[in-house]
Image 1 (cartoon, rainbow, N blue to C red):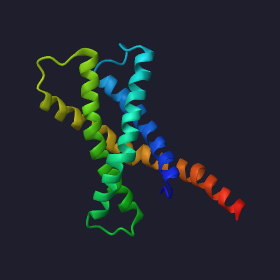
Image 2 (image 1 turned 135 degrees about the vertical axis):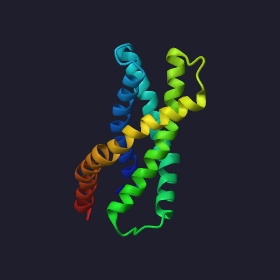
Image 3 (image 1 turned 90 degrees about the vertical axis):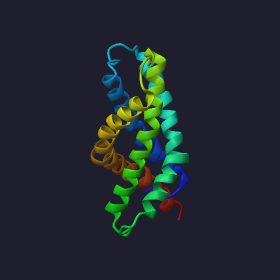
Image 4 (image 1 turned 180 degrees about the vertical axis):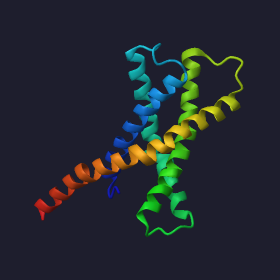
Length: 164
């Protein structure tokens, strides 16, 4: 998909925006905070989550997911298999890391006294993964790849063709 660092940044921005919007509202709904939080608090939580997710995507989880996906024994000439492998590794990594973020935010907003942190993390991870995986594979992945190909890469191709 992305061929340059600039394209990787655009792709990451698009993917993180879509995933974080949906997952932020899902987690607020899950924790009973959807009607409780002010608009400003929702925007702040989104922005913090977005920055963390983007940094993870670009510098840790993204490169690691690609490394793991390409080390798996499957036919790498099949583009669909490559996309599924990378997407699966990305969702596992991002759900794992962003579940920690979600627990921290929940603790800051309403505390977590008398809660087993390991059980809370495991439940948060499972609940996030159950939504994030199909969201990534069926909705955001195809949508972002389509938008990226049609608008970002096609604009770059047009510029290259004009210069040549």
